[in-house]
Length: 360
Ligand code: SAH
Image 1 (spheres, rainbow, N blue to C red):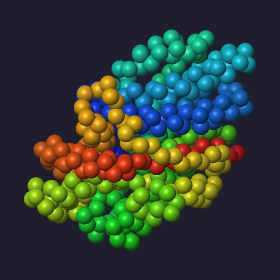
Image 2: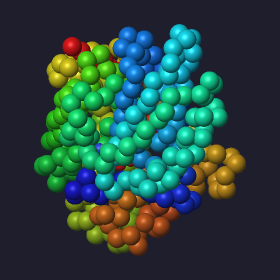
Image 3: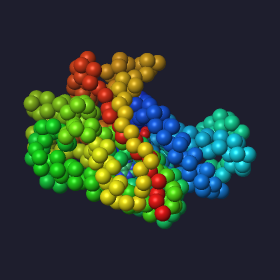
Image 4: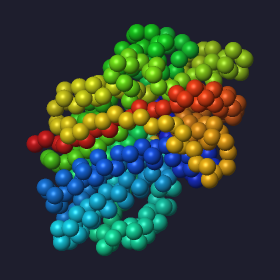
């Protein structure tokens, strides 16, 4: 699987798009707002740049894409008012993999500008937006060109499926039922990817620049993934049923593994310390129920809407491996399985959020 080519959230603005099914991720972004506010305010107070360069990595497309930029601008503008200081100009770099729906982002730029001019008290400095297609596991911006990096719910995607996981039968990522060699291969892939991510950002950020990262995680004593039910657990359960029914061939299921890893906070910390370019200001774990993805104003039952939330994230990857024709069937099974987990109350995700400063 060439991850950089096939991975993307479901584009467009239809009923099943990521844009219409990213309420869960929006809630996570809201929960971490105080961490971002603190980081950008500390940076701005110390450095006071005339042009503030911000990057949102793995920005996807939809309402979440500009919401982070809006909040950051609002925080900086409030600081400027309090200090009786002129607004800076903003350069915002929106990055994602090349198959992301950048067109939808660009089309909504005008309404973002209108929102900023209407809702940011006292107005704001000019804002310039650039789309940056490419993998954040490589260099994407010039040396020392950034002051602030944000990345939410993207870093649990790895650059590739680890090698040597062919014996992960019946599973599609690292679970409590996976053989030891599979768990080791997944951990090593995470270590190499995350340290590469830190190295690249260390080049791109100025000294004193800040970075706030939020990703799916697992508990420190949870050696695999058995406490929290995961999207991929539900997909795997549904695929296994379809193998038993003869709709999917067993070897097709066995050769499917996803480039996904949710580290524990100690694993995350260890890589930051080993890489050495950043100091950790803050690291927190928090739980979010899947049920926040349910919007009672929309059509559809809770289990239907939560299935749509899963589908917008995982469908493009599944279509690249299995036939498109199986997906409606597959998500029908997913919905039944999800309803069963929901009744047991274990649909909760653990997230990690880390705030870092580029050291000199
Ligand atoms: N930040 C948004 C989107 C999260 S979805 C939000 O919180 O709603 C995760 C996004 O990360 C997807 O759009 C996916 O394409 C992107 N992504 C995954 N791996 C990436 C990589 N290596 N480089 C850039 N973007 C990546």
